[in-house]
Length: 171
Image (tube, rainbow, N blue to C red):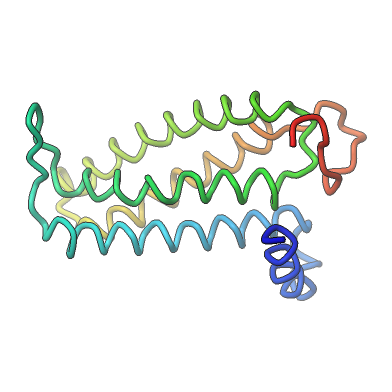
C-alpha cells in the first residue's frame, strides 16, 4: 500500500531527528517539504514552459502568468497535500473524513488568498522574481497551514488519544 511505503521511507530517516521533534512533526516536515518542492517545481515548469511567462487569455478574463502558474501547480499539489496530511501526518484525527475535507478546503481557500496576496505583493510591489516570490510566499503559508491543520483541520477531539492511531470512522 502506498501509505505504508511512504511512512516506512519517512520513518527510516527519523532517528537522527528524534531529539528535536516528534514523529508527527517530522512526518509533516517531510511530507510538507516534499509536496512544497513539488509545488515550486511545478510552478517553475508552468511559468516557464507551459505559459512561457505569458498571461493566460481566457474568453472572459486574463490571468497573469504568475497566478496562472500558481493555479496549475496547485491543481496537483492540493490533492497530494490532502492525501499526505490525512493519511501520513494526521492519521489519528477523530474527525469524520467529510469534516476533515471541508475544513481542509476552507484552509486551502485561505491559503489561496494568502498565495495571491503575497505573490502579487512580492512580484508587483517589491520586484522579486516570480519563482523566488513563490518560495517566500510558501514559507508564510506553510507556517500558517501547519498550525491550522494540527489544531483545526485534523485535530484530535480527545487530547488523550494516540496521534499515531488511525481513525476508522470515515476511511
